[in-house]
Length: 264
Image (tube, rainbow, N blue to C red; front, side, top):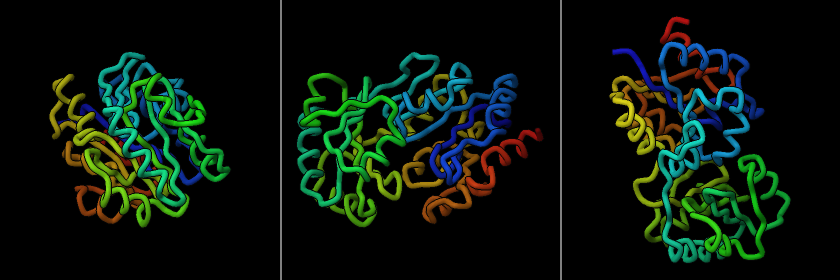
């Protein structure tokens, strides 16, 4: 049973350590498109950021953005989640009480922030192309549908914000999405659910699906497919879950694994 759908994470997976895409990627994806193989970029990044990065082939791929909270294809929304505004307010107040943590509200129109710390801004601007600064980030609740709260933690997310929000948070799922980032989303909203949505929409089975990732926000995506690949640089827990391992993101691991599978 040949693969008909491929999903790949961005940071630590498609992007190398310099945050660059492989020059071999777009030619490969164009070839897959001609063969009828669907490709989805699956990232915690904002849709508008991904759109800029894949502008050349934007009509040939699907965008699973914001860790699965917003799925777009050819400019049309296939899925958009919404967090209850009261829950957003409650969790933002928790985040404000954590030293070194900075909240970002992710919405359908933009990403909203309130802090001007240079370290935060350097990291924030890397992932968000469409942004708006507010005096109070909660004012975004009056302007947009908020589907994710992202938190930048300058002290390191796993040992600080991730632990504290797991202990005190309620109602939202706390997801470790990078060394310095934590995402809060409605339970059950993740890359895996988004991938399953695509499988059902196009009549593609898990056995016909391939996925690549490197971090814990990729777990559900790996569980939704048979051909699950952890990058050589992946988190140890993800490696334990996946059936296969690809070369590292600095060794063009995704492109090489796909080319080997399809004998390209």
